Amino acid sequence: MDRLKILVVDDESRMRKLVKDFLVKNNYDVVEAEDGSVALDIFFEQKDIALVILDVMMPKVDGWEVCREIRSYSKVPIIMLTAKADERDELQGFQLGVDEYISKPFSPKILVARVEAILRRTGQVSADDVLEAGGIQLNKAAHIVLIDGRQIDLSYKEFELLTYFMENKGLALSREKILNSVWNYDYFGDARTIDTHVKKLRSKMGEKGNLIKTIWGMGYKFEVE
Image 1 (tube, helix red, strand yellow):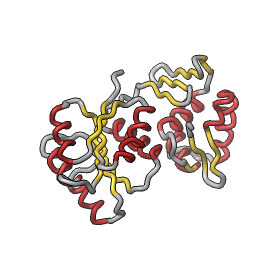
Image 2 (cartoon, rainbow, N blue to C red):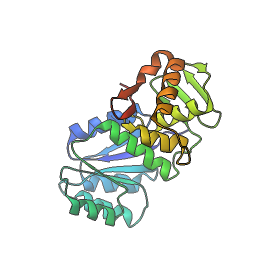
Image 3 (tube, rainbow, N blue to C red):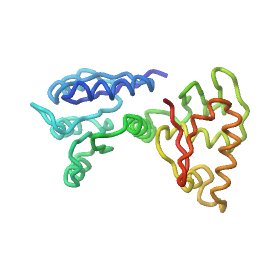
Image 4 (cartoon, rainbow, N blue to C red):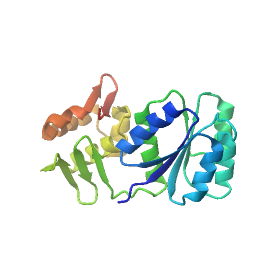
């Protein structure tokens, strides 16, 4: 599959580099713009931008104006970054058609997780895609998991659980959330079901089982250093 292209717009070069490095590491192409004017030029020149990450406060043309301009021509997903955790800003963003709104400072891992979730939701990443992280390759269509190129044998629920962890990489997941998402609402089990499956899954994953971190008193997180 071709790498999807993301436009990162921020007047701080350090911030652009941080975001770019994490996106490139997760198999995205990244183009950068240091202000809103450059961003609009790039957006309308390059027709294959899949998503825009846009800072609000910028010289020349601010993020709101860029968003307005893009939205008058395109429904491309837009994530707004802002230093101000102001509810009015957030409402304005959603009124302009912003898909996600993230306040600085933020975790780049969370940003990447949001990017992946939005691209899946907007149908730009197929549900049949191969998920890759930390030497693990999971093919949802073929129901195959490879660890460092070697296939491992998982039960249906273990496969679903690993898929859910990888799709929500870097996010803290409560046991209740995992239960509802992987076992669905019609399952009348308890948290111990998850703990048992996680234990089996970790043991089958060998050393890679350490990527599933326990968050005491809450649940789990799939984290790749």
